[in-house]
Image 1: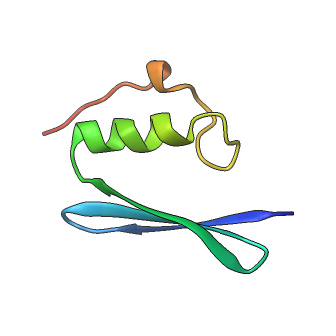
Image 2: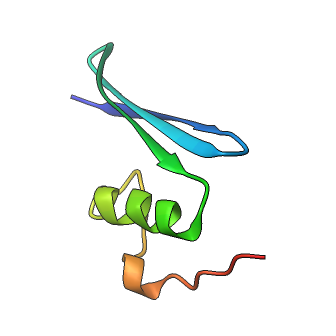
Length: 63
């Protein structure tokens, strides 16, 4: 069964919704911070639709 992912990027947070078979199976909110971005990628690492690179290969920068 296919999974679909919706991502809503806001000024203070990133909300990720995963749907399978027409049903929402998970909704998560991550803060718009370097730590929040890491948490999002690390939590979903290994899912081809999420991220094709392992978290340790990503260079993090924040203004």
